[in-house]
Length: 379
Image 1 (cartoon, rainbow, N blue to C red):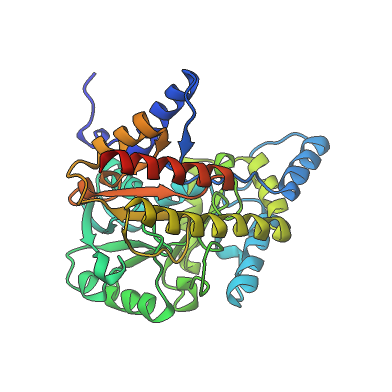
Image 2 (cartoon, rainbow, N blue to C red):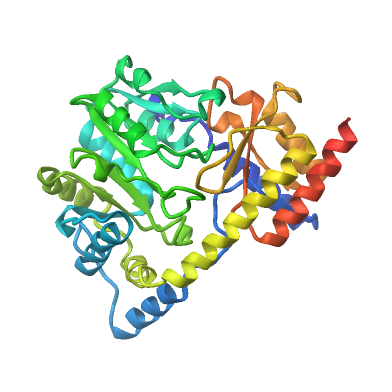
């Protein structure tokens, strides 16, 4: 059978790196994982306890398409705790991870063929999901000297129907303050603005600003994957304008029916795990310090210091014009898995690497030591 052109999306290179790293581990190699943005910390105990209680009380079936009312209310309370916002739980849509939220948002907001702005460097699945939905991603380049922060004029001048912006950003970890975020929203005018806030809660200075603090006329996407350490549970959420809720409900019902019931129960518990989650956060903050110092000592010096998330994005143009080959050399020689920048920036990513510090403290120390030895062997 013939495949539709929209099925031919780019590979998610980080998953290719992970596959090769896993193959080497199965063959007996010791590998330090700095490629995937997956917390080494487990789901909080409160999440596990909530799931156990749910399993003991009855069958887990379909939930409402918008999610369990108790979870939606809990997420709304989170906006009061984090941002001081009085959010109506009716505007919260629980999704199958943030990926499900992207599908729902792009489907609701854009007609087939529409152009949608995405930051470069930025999360690669934005582009692939857009292409799979017969939409056209339009790259909006950011630069190292501006801290890889998108500038308002780039949005104002872009021929796009809308844009998705992440703060903190993946892969750079850089963040927008309130004024910068407000300027971007203002530059979009009446066009759609989607704010990816999946790394909120993981900030290393000023707290992250939600676009909801600026206007209700935005789509917010978040997830339990990062701060809540629940990647494999596949539960996320959206906040949408009040008059979009019923449209989103119909789409969610038909595309996904609902997010996994078991994961929703665990998410309710996770919202009560503040002390454990803050302890996890301190692990990543310490890891960040180890990598910022260790990478510079190894020779990876061209870095925009990350404000949040758990990534460091390094310019390695002094080492290579083929970041995929360099990443493979580091993996095969040093036993450290890192991600080529081509995943995040198809035009300039051949000269960059992303290092994730979401792993354990021990792995970060070992990984830095191996990278120093690797770089010394090349000099």
